Image (cartoon, rainbow, N blue to C red; front, side, top):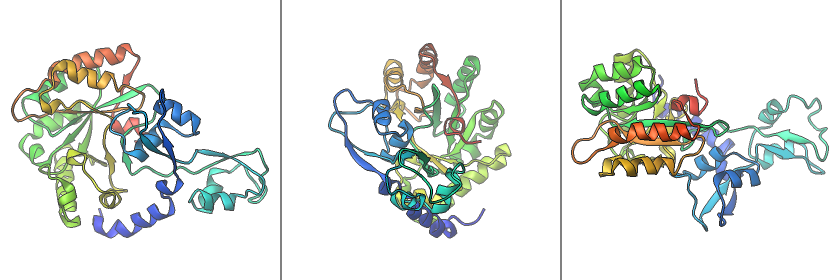
Length: 322
């Protein structure tokens, strides 16, 4: 893989060509609003709103400020041309052509006609696709030889596939646990070598902790990973651009805070109250000391969400990646 630093200029150029903030309008959450209602009102999707606004919860507060991305389609008005629309929405004219193969003449569009708008490839996800009733369970900080095996047994017994964001130093210490994660069909992501706050790292230090972890994962499982989750959920835009396109940065929309001594009941409630199609759930598969009830909460969480009609998928499936 090329050095991450060599792709920074290319990534930044791509961001300038298709900048989601430049295509966004402001919106203030009203009483009774939900992500679904707001997305339908503004002709966009729930996941695009969640990802643009970096929402760590599907719950919205009255008066909360949101940026609304441009709709995925546009109803043509008098004087519109595809070229004018490409300028308005900040995409290239060639992408506009690719998105509208049904239009033979580039200039000949008419009022009332609906044209497609190209979608920008997401570089970071807080929420996955919402067109199906699916949820992704994720587990950070492992593997270990205590909690990880228990979690894997529950997932196997329940027939659930999940995603594990692992640390390089722990993969090196517990390779057999990572091999089991891979063997049983779970997705694996990079969570740095030793859990630093990456916003305090130089580009070279970020590259080192990410690449050394990916190397250890591939050496252990024989598989590459293109998923990355920053420790503490802390990551600046520059770093997001730096890692893309080699890594999709994955955050979450439902935080169990299981590391903070929460009871099993509190952990389950944190997820069921935020349950919505496309939600990414944050849990942990390693805990050093103190109260930690993820293992106790997990079976109840799975059963309750299944009763509500949810299917459990890996993060790559949820974000429509192979």
